[in-house]
Image 1: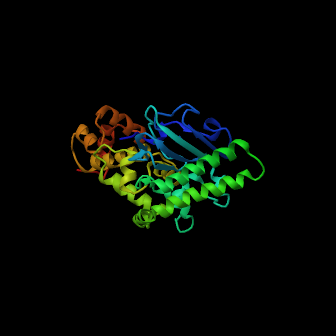
Image 2 (image 1 turned 120 degrees about the vertical axis):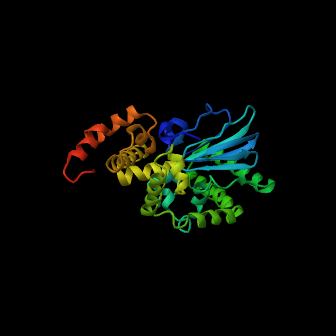
Image 3 (image 1 turned 90 degrees about the horizontal axis):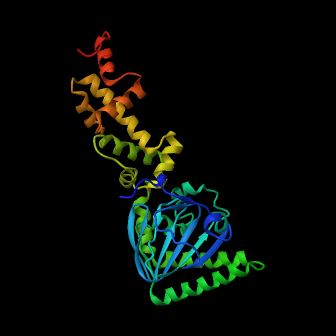
Length: 306
């Protein structure tokens, strides 16, 4: 399972493109990113020749000739292109294609597709394979050539022409995969509220405190992307996922220390701490007392446990 997205490299347009608003390149133009990474901009990858599998969010999807990959900003992904593969990569800034979309990139998952249907391929790439038949793919290859020429020349009104072609390309993906996109939108409907999402995550954490937990596990249980969950937690609780889980585990340990006379090492394991020494150190940081001192103090206090 992929590690938390916070441990992976984040790229800006200035690092991976020749222009800050839009850029297109074909294989060989830049070094290949072979490890999972994130970037601040939208990306479309087009498979022309060669077969591979893309890793996107917490999913693995086919990627080969005739496939397109739609990547949201900040979404963890990688397409390991095999030797001899042919492909194109299109990068663009949100404000370039959708200047009217006044939403922070990390909040895009809350935008309903009824409002911006062309976001659907980017929102649901983890669940849908965007493969195109020969006639449609020939149109896409033609658009790529036009985009490349417009980007290379950058003449008067080139930006408008590029936007028009980009929108046609995304709209084609929406039309050809309409049923699958609507199915995913229906599955995720009602799960976009921040309050509801946080409640689902907290419920998952509460039910799995004694087990190993990852950001990806909690995100999947709450029907969120790992990256969005990390952003949501930081924004709503000012905590990372690890900090939240540790805090909940220490609260559970406090309850067990008060309510039982179980061995401290056993309580540590019940709360998800494999190492009793580490548990005692974190408990002291949180409570100002070691678990043993905390229990002794509560027993000595009038009205404490018998």
